[in-house]
Amino acid sequence: MKNRKRASVIFPVVMMAILCVTEPADTATVEQPITELSVIADDAVLNVSRYSAIPRATYRILAEDYEFLRDERFKGVVCPDKIMQLPKSLATHAHDDYRLLKAKTVARKNIIYVIIPENVVTRVREAIKMKRKFYIVYTPVDIYGGFPVVKFVEEIEGESTRAETPEKLEGIWRFYPAQKGDAWSIVIGRNVRIIEYEINDVSKNFAKGIQRTRVPGRPDLDKTADFSIFYDKKQITTIEEGFNGRNAPYKKTDIILQEPLKPGTIWKVRVGNEDRERKIIAVNETVTIGIREYTNVIVVKEDASAAGDGGAGFYAATYYFYSADVGFIGCKIDSSFSKDGLRNFNQIDDWFMQRSGGEMR
Image 1 (cartoon, rainbow, N blue to C red):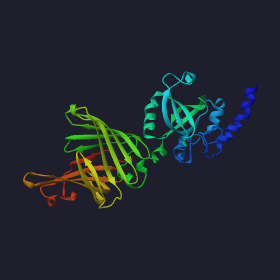
Image 2 (image 1 turned 90 degrees about the vertical axis):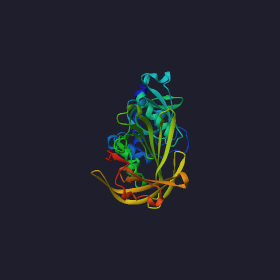
Image 3 (image 1 turned 120 degrees about the vertical axis):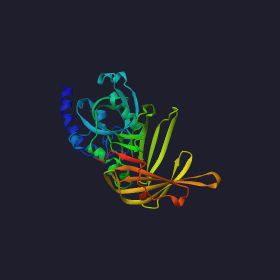
Image 4 (image 1 turned 180 degrees about the horizontal axis):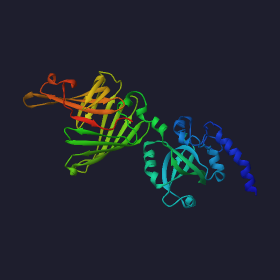
């Protein structure tokens, strides 16, 4: 009877606290009514239409009144820290294949535990590695070590998550966009080699996926590598990590573009054991590959040279093409025994590489 009485008193108080906007606390004590697992900067993700009606809960409520909130659904965001085995004291809340995630609130001052299923462990580990937030729908279940425990219901994904991805931002990001689920291919020569890309994870400053290299008719030469794109306001960097034909690990880092995006911008890249120079030589170009016309294209030139026998020189130029809202669309190459003999990109008809598929949705 006493419990029923307390429930009838506290439930209106709980709902009031959920509906009120509270300021983040300056201290780590659970008595402070800090804004649960979220801050204003995360509203765009948490307020996707599908989740807009789901309320939030303050940290204090999760710590003190979880018993009256079991089976209620809330939304929030945590900063994952460590994945642990589910302790016996919490085993009644989940099956054997669940794990316990130790996390912190967005202010990184208050500890909270999240019971997660096995099928999201990989994504959470990636979030820990990349220091990313984890947006979830959850239900309060218990207390562990003096800190609130909630159970994962589902991950929050949707249009607003996409809105944080690089391709939706202005500037340099537009010339190498990536969305979760994107897939495209780069054909080298006349199907001599095909490089396939697939993006399976995105955030505001990076995208990650798989790069598969195929040699038609030679499946023994196929290989797969991890592929990452890192964005900041001044440059785009890609990293390829995998194992070569001798089964030795390798890592390739490449600076794709550099601000400012105008002719004359120069940066250095490492190709093998050689430092090379890249330079933006044209912007706002219109380029046709096959039947497709690309607009707002940036052209980057990479120079290479080598000394030959008897003092003779050998010069090469590679032209890379990047189209806004599409990305890399192809490259052309030229070589000559003199630097002056190198042709400009618009004088070369053949494409050494060209893109196939993966237009921005």
